[in-house]
Amino acid sequence: MYKIAVSMFAVSLALLSCDKEPLDPLTFQTNLVEIVEGDVNSSVKMVFTASSVPSDDISVKYEVREKTARSGSDLIATSGTLEFIGDSKEAFFELELVGDDHFELLEYFEVVLDYGPTIVFTVGIADDDAVAEAVEDADGFITPAEYPSMALVWGDEFDGNSLDLTDWTYEVGDEWFNNELQSYTDLPENLRVEDGKLTITALEELGKYTSARIITQDKVEVKFGRIDIRARLPKGQGIWPALWMLGANINEVGWPACGEIDIMELVGHQPNVTHGTAHYEDNGHKYRGMLKTLSSGDFSDKYHVFSIVWDRNYITWYLDGQPFNTLSSSQINNYPFNNPQFFIMNIAVGGDWPGDPDETTVFPQHMDVDYVRVFQ
Ligand SMILES: [Ca+2]
Ligand SMILES: [Ca+2]
Ligand SMILES: [Ca+2]
Image (tube, rainbow, N blue to C red; front, side, top):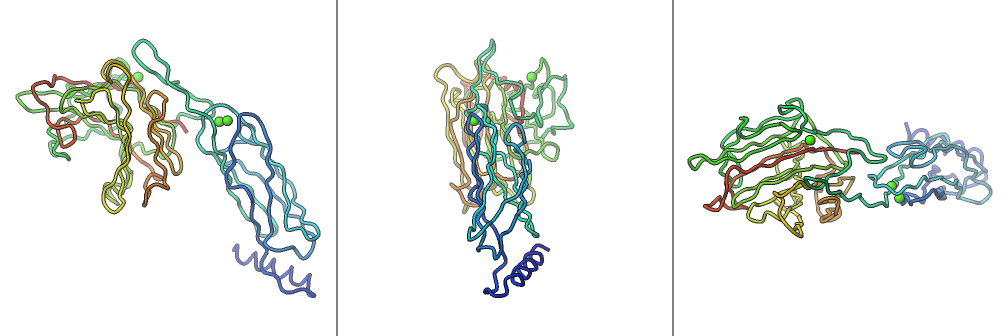
């Protein structure tokens, strides 16, 4: 349809200008792919360049269309006419941008040119504001329940008295990876929801370890957003809590091609260190991660907020609102993180990374999760 319309337009141009060489179909390019937001309102010239000088003066209608960027809060949607006059291949309009000083994900809008055929240009607005740091209250660090210009698209405050099985599934059994020792159950001694929090408990009984692992696979799958998880973590040799995500296409492409985002992992013999890591397939299993060490105390003392900001082509990890790791799609081949992922929360016991529990390990060990929230 598009090709036909373009070639018809080219024909009509050729008929109008029979004393000139036949023209290639006219197309347009623009100078803007991505704009930086700014903290105050501003305007920017959006210039369109024709592929050749039109044979006659022409008027091209343009329309700015909201997408994730919204008129009034991110830009001013407008429409009008671009005039290509004389020998000029260029015409422009002034685009009005709305600045602010709060953090947002990358947003985009469209500009549609209509000159018979239509062309749609997609333009990004890159945010230039820092993520707000968490504040400290009586039992630890906490993040806001809402953010300007972002909507809560999913969350669990763990306010009921049982796990919400519309969103979560227990994974139970004895057979796990990495030479882990635990058996996962759906018993209340291993998982409870009460007092506004989820508590996963790792237990030892006669040398056997039990714990719990829950997933949102096929129930809650998200792509992009600011994700905040407030939790207090267990510790001790052989204790391995994790708050993490796996690609929703894992059953089709397998691991690690599906991509894994570890928002928080901790090995209990280093109870003051959180790890933020991405795993992926790039000529075999590869991973990139960074760690963040508390300046005092450990992660069992009080709540901390483990966050990622996950947007098109990048992921940044935060502890209490302070960034400590970023992955960009340009750093790896076969970047899998522009696809939906689901959540996993668990405490593993033993295994290749932490090693097995020993006589210093105290049981039971608890991970308390106050909330998980996804904002877009
Ligand atoms: Ca700004
Ligand atoms: Ca902003
Ligand atoms: Ca809660």
